[in-house]
Image (cartoon, rainbow, N blue to C red):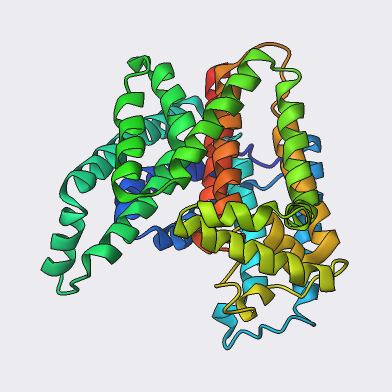
Length: 397
């Protein structure tokens, strides 16, 4: 009987598909960041689903992957004792975390597997998308979010000016997050650092006009992180990894210590109202953490501690401690240590420095403004990891 030799199959199309899908996300990113950042969650989920067939965890991925798995599993287990009970399955943060762990992880891993052509398209979409977003932020700052208000009025959904400013200002978080890789990618595309002009101007002036401090703080943090990794490519990533570990492991103790010596209330009385409210959340979170530091109060428990805390403590480390206790804090610390430690290089690399700056921005916003489990922000974290990986890969081709 004659043996039939199977026909050789060509290379899988899925790496190219997943690479171009991420490019599509960045093409529409300026409009989403301007009009409604919540849309990032379903859009990035779709891009991640297209990348699932390429899912492959390498040895270098294992520390962060195991830590994320522990964090997600422990979060799901903690729902047993959490005082927060979602009314529907669509409100279940545990279910969303399981899905995000798979699809967002696939998107990040797929960023290594795209072709040079798809990565070039991705870099173009990133640079011009963030430049356009910077111009939009400048226009809104000049008009007091007037363009956004007129658009809402035209669609039959008018909005108050103060709420319009609040909605538009969310675009600053996205622009600041992607500023480091976008500026460096622009240089790689032959634009020198001209892309930095609309991007940085679109952060600094609108943040000042709208009265938002967090983007400016994050921008400074990005500059320091990039400078550190550029000047010291061997030691810099380790320093950042150590700082991330200290942040997640010692946050409750730091708040307790500052309150103990009497400086906390003095400082709170001197800062602006928004920062005073944050410090109030942190103080309440520290008190409740001390009641159950080992296992925490359970996933999403911070939603139930009003009025002392509104939705979440506005600090990633305190939220993880409050909800998931010591186990969650250690897992979160390992994730960030793995991310920053992976930036170790024998010599200076501007693409790697951009990754450090991007990570510093994300961590800064998590430390002062956003909740750990917010779907759109987790989606942006996956996008940030993917774009930094793609940027480093593109530099090698």
